[in-house]
Every structure is written in C-alpha cells, then in structure tokens.
Image 1 (cartoon, rainbow, N blue to C red):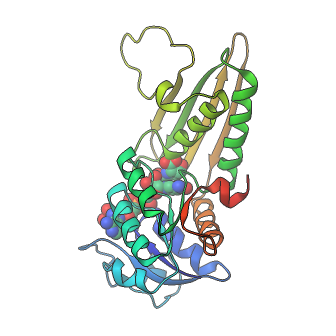
Image 2 (image 1 turned 120 degrees about the vertical axis):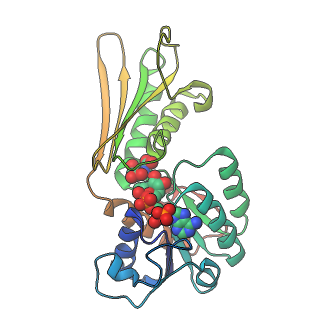
Length: 265
Ligand SMILES: NC(=O)C1=CN([C@@H]2O[C@H](COP(=O)(O)OP(=O)(O)OC[C@H]3O[C@@H](n4cnc5c(N)ncnc54)[C@H](OP(=O)(O)O)[C@@H]3O)[C@@H](O)[C@H]2O)C=CC1
Ligand SMILES: O=C(O)C1=N[C@H](C(=O)O)C[C@H](O)C1
C-alpha cells in the first residue's frame, strides 16, 4: 500500500515515516509539510533519522494524493479538514490522528467519508482502546454512586485540551452510563464551584516536560476508589496503530471508522 505522511516533520510525522518504511506491504509515496516549512526539499527518511528514502518533502498534497492509496494525518484541525476534502476527491484512505477537532470539523469529516475511507481516533494504540472498553464496562457495572474523573498529562508542547484520549475515555464512560458526554462534561473548575453535580464526568489537564501521554480514569465511591490508567512511553505505538488502520481500511467501502473497528473490539 502506498502511503503519504502529512506533517512529515512533526513529532508524530517523523514516527509515521519510520513506521511506514518499516512496515511490510507499505511504501512511502509522499511527505507533505506546509508552504514555507524548513523541511521542504529534504528527504523524509533523513528527517526521520533513517537512510534516505528518495522521498522529498513537498507542499503539494494534491499531486501526492493523486498517486497514493492512503494518507496518515497527525497535523492540526484546519489542515486535517483540508486534507479530508482532498482525500475524498482522490477516493483514498485517510487515517486521522489529529485531536482538538470541533463539532464543525467532525461534520466535515463525516461528509468526506461518503467518498473516502476515514479512520479517526484520539488514540491509535491498542492499549488505550482496550482500556476504553474496560472503562465502558466498569462505568456500566458501578452505576451513578461512583463519581468519574479523568486525569491526563502530556508534554509541554501539546496545544489542545482535554486530550483526544481523555475525551475518548470520557465517551466510553458516558456510553457505559447511558448518557451523552456533552450533557455531563466538566472540563474546568476554578473558584467557588459549589459541590460536584451528581453524574458529571470531570476532566483534569496537566502539561509539562516530555510526557508522551498519561491517562487515568478514576471511579470514586463512598469509601473506595478504582483507578484505571494507561501510560504511553513511545510515540511509535501510535504510528504503528495508524499504519495498521490504513492497511485495514484499504479494502473497505467509504465510511467513517474508528480504532475499535480496526482492532475488532
Ligand atoms: N491519535 C493519536 O494516537 C495521536 C494523536 N496525536 C495528535 O496528532 C497531532 C500532531 O501532534 P504532534 O506530532 O505532536 O504535533 P507537531 O506540531 O509536532 O506536528 C504537526 C505537524 O503538522 C504540520 N502541519 C500543520 N499544518 C499543516 C498543513 N496545513 N500542511 C502540512 N503540514 C502541516 C506542522 O507544521 P508546523 O509546525 O509548520 O505547523 C507539524 O510539522 C495533534 O493533534 C496530537 O494531539 C499525537 C499523538 C498520537
Ligand atoms: O499530542 C499528543 O502528544 C498526543 N495526543 C493524543 C491525545 O490528544 O490524546 C494521543 C496521545 O495521548 C499523545
């Protein structure tokens, strides 16, 4: 399968280039960065710390998408919406790891999925998706007597909050409880907040250093507390998941899929 990496000079972009180069059955057919990027013209393999792959970074996604089977996209919301339109026109696979997408962005992805095969997840690792399944079942089993709080910590350069993974875990908890996350989500607390509203799902965001991704879902009851945690130690996890998602989606009909579909959970 031919794959293009967009945002090829980013933290995840470089990991994706490595994962594609090392995956059986995949070749890197293009590497994209934005206009004016210092990475333009450089070999994507060399940028990723590999021997040259003969794939220079360009700012021309249209040409790259016309000669590929799929695109791996861990960039930013505006770029991802743009790439989704181009991937739909080219009828290719679009793996979206980008987080911080708004409801309007998601609606555009849903529209693009009439023509493209899109796999989107706030976290592409097997471990987090297994944890989400566990959280859904624990939330259903414990019921509303247990308060649910989700804590996350990421590196100092992360720009969106709560993390995509925290929201994915929140969705799982809400689903287990049979409620809509939007109705019960509390993302900030500051000042005289009053007592906790029963049924709320709270989020706490920490940022600092080089943390790849830590998440904990806390079920706090009267006299006992259950904590389910995941610690990502290497971004290679997410890149491997993205390549797996692209290979999985290649023969599928157009649609919007998740890692739960890819992993068969
Ligand atoms: N779902 C998952 O499993 C994971 C998701 N993520 C998400 O992936 C995203 C990227 O994270 P990370 O790699 O750390 O961020 P980086 O900022 O390191 O990388 C993003 C890259 O995309 C580039 N980019 C942005 N806009 C465009 C554009 N229009 N055209 C081409 N390139 C563009 C950026 O260039 P420039 O610097 O010039 O803006 C940058 O090189 C985030 O949303 C993050 O939350 C991260 C890890 C795992
Ligand atoms: O920005 C990151 O780094 C990460 N983003 C994703 C998220 O928002 O959950 C996944 C992972 O935790 C790393």
